[in-house]
Length: 603
Image (cartoon, rainbow, N blue to C red; front, top):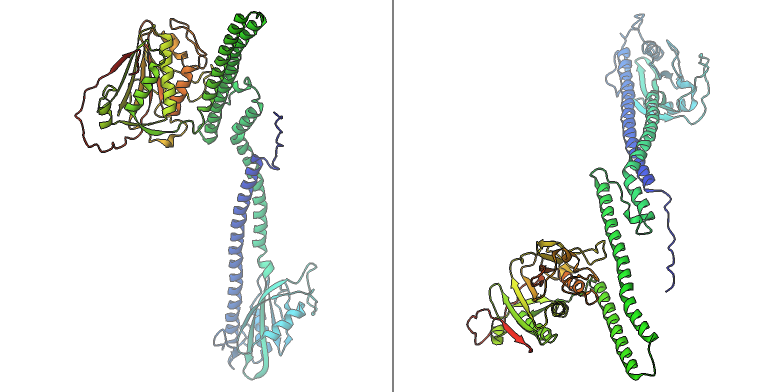
């Protein structure tokens, strides 16, 4: 066999812990960014709305100064009686109205005003504005181009060129023209003055939004710090939560031998990770038991094979080839030992196959016919015995003594006939081997709708630490069981309804010396031999095979025995759903339960 080629390990760039932290950071960053952007947009919209409100209020102020404007969407006109609020001088020209408005309307922070007469700026300030509209020729040109003599104009302009100072007004050393301005243009007309006047008010949008932008910048810094904190906390929490998994990994990596499987992972808490650790510990328990079982099996096989090999080798070494009788005797002994080795290997192979999904092939058959056939085969094992074969059900007792009655009222069961025959005959062979010669042996089959007494959850579903097929727990002081309990189906639980509606019990009772209670838990072990009055012949696989076949059917094997009394082995398996019996033309009356006893003949 060629050595296994190691599969190269594929390591991820990021560990699970790192991926958890990254995803938590991404989710947190998305949430912080969404809330920050939403807050910024709400505040920005509020500031822009406030700017428009101030611009529209300027229209009302100019109308009040003009004393004659009708509405905000018509030119401001001044009647002959309009007076300057400060000097009480009549306002008779466009310049007077514009100058008065410039004096009365003091610009707020980030606000600027400018008047035009026939397209010419007429700046007159009561105080130096934060910025001057006429510093940007592009903006002046745009205002004049968009002006409407019949209504106000509200708009937004972006200055793409460097500002150029066009007036001699004093400026601050760090004064710069804003990149975005929000403006309103108000047409001004005075009766008796043919010139066209414009009054423009503009706001530095960037400056108005500076506080909002600053708050967004502050929020971004705080959010970045929060992300760092979230990352640190996530790293610590993920490390704490994943610590059991790291222990699982270390334990799995270090489990290279049976001795390493003794170590267990400490379990704390009651969360999913703790449940996983408990499950892994349970798996290690099973692996440890399986490893010990395999080692025990190999040791037992080596011991069992060593004996016939030693016998054959010893006989061949002392063989005198010149003596024909000695050659024939040695040949017969070698063939017998080789047959024993072949039987041993066949039993081991059967035990290995018993875990396969299709080890059992269920089929519906008549219980009476099946019982009679097995009884005939069993009686051939030792014709000198007194064989008793009987078949009955909980509702319709029947006996193999009356074959026509079997056909008139059949009881069907769903089992693997070959496997069950093998197991039942194995029990019969054990009874022949370990009971008194010429004694009675009884084979009984029974179908019932209630779970048989003593059927307990004592199934060896995993090899025990001693290398056995499984543990056997006494159901009563003199009863032991091996197989599968009703809550643990066999390899193919879908093959039959669960829980079973009917139970089939197949018993073999001998008149032997019995089995000591202390020895019963070992009797179903592989290569298990009980050193008592029953003897210790054979390889010790027979009852293990019986238990494996019962296990594959979803059942169990029961032992009722005690030292000095008879022993009864019972195979208990689900019988499957009943099948409607065929229509009969000449039904016969019900009959009482009988039994057939034979000695030296088939029942």
